[in-house]
Structures are given as C-alpha cells and as structure tokens.
Length: 367
Ligand SMILES: Nc1ncnc2c1ncn2[C@@H]1O[C@H](COP(=O)(O)OP(=O)(O)OP(=O)(O)O)[C@@H](O)[C@H]1O
Ligand SMILES: [Mg+2]
Image (cartoon, rainbow, N blue to C red):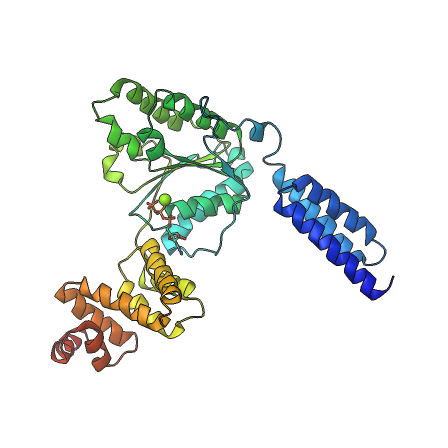
C-alpha cells in the first residue's frame, strides 16, 4: 500500500476508535484493538505486542469489579439512584508527599494488605478499620484514595453527612446495603464525615430509628471482616466519644503541612508560572491547609486570565491579604522567615509592614 493511502486509513481508524471511546463502548474498543493487533502482527510485532499487553492489563483490572459485585451496586428503592459508586481504578493527578510519621502509618496499612498471607500464617490479620482525623483539607480523603490506588482496589465512598441529613426512614436500609456491598468486595470503604453520626445522636428528632442506625454502624465496625478496609474520616475527633474511636484498630492523625510541604504544594499549583514566588508564598501561607493553598493559587490563576491581569499582581494580592489577617507578632515572625527565605530586610519590611528596627531587634533575639 502506498504511504499516503496507509496514512489515510490510519486516520479513519483513529476517528473510529475515538468515537467508540467517547461513547464509552468499552467492549467495541477492545474488539477494535484486538483486530489492530492481529493486523500488525507481521508488519510491526512490537506494536502488536504493546496492544495485546494493554488489552490483557485492562481485562485483569476490570475483572476486580466484574461479575456479581458490580451488578449488586445498591440502589435506593424509590429513586433507583446508586447509593455509592465504586471508583475504579483510582487515578491520582500527582503522587502526594506525606509527613514521615504519616507516611509510615499509611505504608503500614498498604503493606499489611499486600502481604496478608504472611500475617495469616502467624494467626494475625491485616488492619481492618482505621480512623483518619485532622482539620479540613489536610489529605484524609486523598489518603484513602491513595491507599485504594496503591492496592489497585475500588474506592467506595459513603458520605455520612449527606446520608444523615437526608434521613427518610429508609436511610438505615440504604446504609446497611452499602456496608453489605462493601463487605463482599475487596475494596477500600471510606465513611466520610464520620462525626455526623455523633452529632445526630443527641438530636431529639427522629431519635429512635437514627439511634438504631448508629448502633448498627458501630456493630458493623466491630465485626468488620478482613476482605475490605474500612476507613472513617472526621474533622472532629472530639465529637466522637472515646467508646466510638476506640473501636478502630488504627487511628491516624493528619496535621497541617510543614513548611517543606507547603513549598511543595505551592510549587505544584504554580506550575511553571511565577516560580520565583515559591519561597515567599510558602513562607506566607504556612499555617494553612493543603486545600486552602490550592484554592488560593487556583483562584489567582483564574482571575489573572479572566481579568487579563499579570499573575504576579494576583500573587502579590494573596500575600497582602494573608499579611492583613495576621496579628502583629505573627507578622514579625513572617518578616524574619521571609529574610530566612532570601529576602532583604527592606523587602521583608515592605511585605509585612513591620519596621526595620523591630525586624533587627528580633533578628538579634533569634540568632
Ligand atoms: N499531602 C498532600 N500533598 C498535596 N496536596 C494535598 C495533600 N493532602 C491533601 N492535598 C490536597 O488538598 C485538598 C484537600 O484534600 P482532602 O480532600 O484529602 O482533605 P480532607 O482532609 O479530606 O478534608 P475534609 O476534612 O474537608 O474532607 C485536595 O485537593 C488534595 O489534593
Ligand atoms: Mg475529606
């Protein structure tokens, strides 16, 4: 075949393949790829091998979800809406960096699952239930996704706040159905906003049925089988009475990011833009959560585009606003940190409004 003809044929096939993919016709896409692999077996064996491997990998991945488990996704009887949709495979946009202590705890959860045979031999079992606690936006949900990603298991998410607030008599059944479903599937089950069960326990309205539901939930946690990992996440550990959080086999605390992690996060969201702002932004944004940092920088980027304003101007505004919210002593601290991050005394004064005299005095104390 002439080159031009061949090229034309490939183009037509690409369009066909794109259409099938966009329509979500997984089976047709697979058939199509298999045919391609056959056709190129002689002409380009390496290319054909690559395609065959892709097919094999895709099949072994989706087999986790295939069969009974997927068909049994519980639905609400009235609305027929799926109550919890498993996410699989779990894809992460970036590889998160965890504080060393946290990293160790999370790795332990993953390794126990990966090497559960070794544990069973010693009459032990992998950790079945874990409670993630910490302020908003510090990576609890991300960590649950990361674990599912590492284990190549589906993530099933149940937002308890939503479930509890839409309490309609059948909620109890719905929750039970989801728990039963998650028990039967090797997955990571995330019970998000776990403290909402505590908040509602003291509520006078609908007490009876809700109390029963909470009791069931706690019993389920007590007797959680080993097949899947149950993770509960809460911003308010203090709202859970100790009897509740003692039920979990592991309690993992998430904290605000350290200066190094703030810097990494700032750089991640700045991308190639405004690289020279990394150190000063990180110093200024220390004390905020990952989520706050992400929100501020993304908003600055959007505003810069829509308002046709240089990105620098928007970054300056972030720093200015943040300084405006600090107390005097915090501003002095910031001024000193900025100097440590490489700014001159004059620049630190300009950014923070702290007089150079004060800066000098505190510099003496620090050194
Ligand atoms: N270690 C990390 N490195 C980089 N980004 C992170 C990290 N942890 C969290 N983030 C980012 O911060 C945002 C919030 O994270 P996440 O939703 O996991 O927080 P959370 O603790 O579950 O918050 P909430 O209590 O509000 O549910 C996400 O966009 C996430 O990507
Ligand atoms: Mg969360």
